[in-house]
Length: 351
Ligand code: KG4
Ligand code: ZN
Picture (cartoon, rainbow, N blue to C red):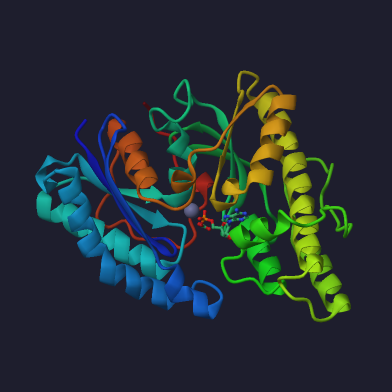
């Protein structure tokens, strides 16, 4: 199959990629809007949409040039069409449709979560190419879910957060500790010099049946401790201990929830032995180590794609487009961007 152009604009990364039909990455670019949102301590949807609109056209032009591919040489154009921030989704989706219409190409409306879910199938990432079914633990700033990926268009949600996403909890606690947004990486770094046993924070849902998780109680416990301690400086040992204790609580919860998810997966699909971890939080070394150990104890292999492919990118969108186009599926130009688009709403496709 000819290459596919992928476009990602669902949150605060403007990204474009050209991926060959065989999964080879011909060119990719990711432009982070971090600096634009940082003064506000979080993503501002209106700023995000305007920034996508400003930078996407030139980014696509440059990515196509770098790939050395003309528009007419493409097999199709794929864009994240939901879930996400509606302004950005409209920009990416409509731009992709424009390119498709102008060049008489098929358009694929990609579900952003499915794009994360199918990344593991990019040739070369997993030893045997991640055959279905496998278990995905998606840990990002906006989503935290355990998903049985059983086919293109077929995903069974086994569980997920009932309140905050894991990255969101890291960011909120980092803010309480006076760290800059997004706080996950800064909190991990601070935790390196801290004592994870100094503050016995709760481990919500530990050993409960199923694999749902809840982090708001843990976040509240940290908040109350910070209030009780009064002024704390981000440079203090106390702050490092708070960070390490919080991170340890999250790691314990995630390892326990992943273990339950693997048991649920085995019960439904006895042949499954692959746990794929994705999302920004998957770059946390403690999280990776704990999940890898939990997988080993269950006879699973844990695979985490490289960080640049775990966090938002357009390679995964192009690849999800390829998986669909290979099955002869594309979308009508009347399909619009959807801020809410659960994986369960997708249809299984015959291969
Ligand atoms: O997947 P991602 O890049 O973007 C989306 O949310 O879609 O994830 C970003 C999230 C942020 O909340 C960030 O703080 C968190 O992942 N994160 C981390 C680490 N690196 C990124 N959390 C904990 N430890 C890290 N090293
Ligand atoms: Zn994402």
